[in-house]
Length: 252
Figure 1 (cartoon, one colour):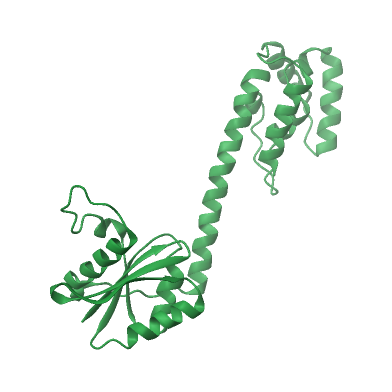
Figure 2 (tube, rainbow, N blue to C red):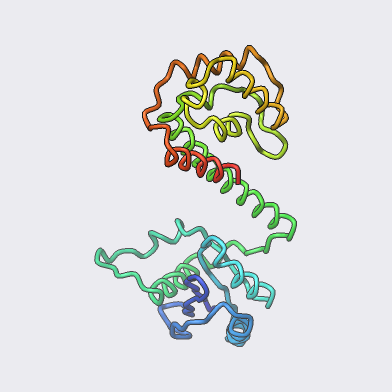
């Protein structure tokens, strides 16, 4: 029986092949994640005498091309959770981590768990695409939340509570009314420094330009809100630029 431990890194891997009782079948060596080198690795492993099983840790997407190539070549591949391997054989308190030692550790882990190693099965293309789409969506949502909080933090110093002036749902394109509003009225003085009637007319024109419903009652409420606050940051071109950049990043 040949247990192949593969320590995966980005773009390359270290391979060690062990047999029972500590016999080293093949000393640790390195391969790059290219079609030619992985194909040669598969050929070399299949030429070993006896049954061969390959063990590697799940490492994000780095292990995927190695696992798939060796599986497609007909080898028994097992991708195990890194947590299961982490504490295995760590008896040396002063242990120094190296790729070679980790490859040997994985190979020995494979020998000890030989009969219970789960067999790797590549994901179907549809499932793989959906999983990556969901991962991208989650990442986008996290970034969007950070950018939204950044804009609100700026508004706390220029136009407090501006993000709470509207409760309209986001449009189909993702735009939100309060974000569009602060792009134009980025400081409370942009509202309060003009007479009420003048602001109402300006707000009506803004609603018409952006396709939002106009309400004179809402215009009065916005004016009262703006008049009741003092912007900590001054109404200046620099402040305007900061808010505009935050709006632009969120809108993008």
